[in-house]
Amino acid sequence: MASCKSLRTLAASAKSPSGRYLSFSEREEIALLLAQDGCVREIARRLGRAASTISRELRRNAATRSGGLEYRARTAQWHAERAVRRPKLAKLVTNPVLQRYVQDRLAGLAGHGCGDRAKNGPALAGHGAEAVRDAIMGTIITLPEQLRRSLTWDQGAEMAQHARLRIDTGLPV
Image (cartoon, rainbow, N blue to C red; front, side, top):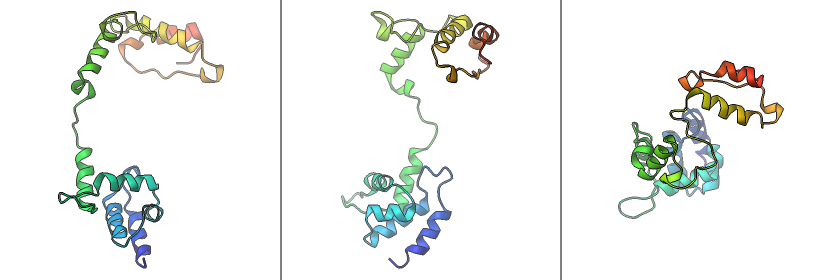
């Protein structure tokens, strides 16, 4: 593999912006190294990636219509780009069981509409800022002191009781 040094230089400069996903140039290098009979661990080492990342990439993308196990960088990139396209349907839209559960919890019902309420507290919809304040206060006082230094609050209407929470708990908000 005499050309591996130049391949490594190419891949290092062309990593994906987040570093989490493989870039097209890394996929090209995988294809080249496979063609040179490179093994998964060696390819991973040369790319500076985990062997599991390379193995997963090959498992997902090393297949063709003919049934062979060839890896094609362009096809793998197409699959990756297709997988991250937006907009995606929300899980609440596509999963009726989850949708019903969320609706029941927001309405103050137990899981799936019958039985006792789950022990993770009352539904907050319709209870307002006082319920949020009380829920946080009841939880925050049980935390160790080093975890109770401050609380970051957003500007939703349910957070309107932040001043009272600070007075009641002494917690900077």
